[in-house]
Length: 213
Image (cartoon, rainbow, N blue to C red; front, side, top):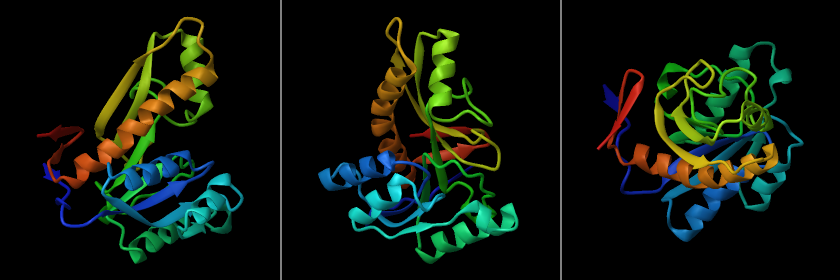
């Protein structure tokens, strides 16, 4: 059993990884501004140079560095480049915020990388299940409840220990777009809370389980 050391004397330094519009990043910044999340964002890394989130991050005055998988000969080289930048920025936690590139997480970062998934893991998760694909699968299956999961990332898709989940009852005849909007409202609450729990030092990891006390 192990846990992340408490950070209560300064803001938590977040490295934020994005692939799209940066909505989760903007939510972090809103929470930082309103005082509900004691954090700062010294570095944003984008998996695509032209994704909308790059400009949004820069408009917010943040350093945003595109690191693109196709520019590297191997997954190992790509992952090394990402984590070397994160180490240089002295981040405490790495938050995958709609990040779609596969990474190999080095041992020193295990237990320090968080991901959010737009379903209640283990439902509707795994390789190829992300974004609208998840919400379309939810609608096609006709489930009555969906939600989001924040978990520690490891080197398997949607596999690491779950930190917290938030659920919602779905309306009848709901569309995938509406599911996405409803779930994102829960993500806006869940991800900052997960960061607070980890930074508190009170969240312990016991194999595949987390214990928060």
